[in-house]
Length: 74
Image (cartoon, rainbow, N blue to C red):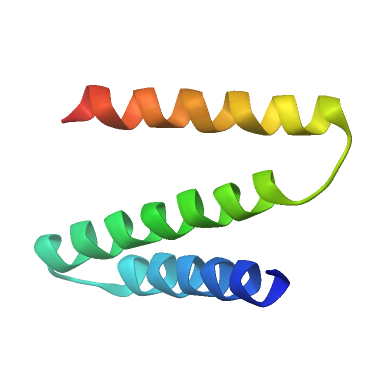
């Protein structure tokens, strides 16, 4: 699970870096969407890891808030 988490974080970082360098709006937009998806996947993996009850509740709240924010944009 740690390997998957690191990979999603790495992909998020690479997409953000490439988006910053992109001169095409469509490419930049696509890279930012992929980075966002990688962040959501990494946060979901983190939420599954065994931690204290409070940390798990905070993570679940963050995921719920980010999901409603994304659905409101579409």
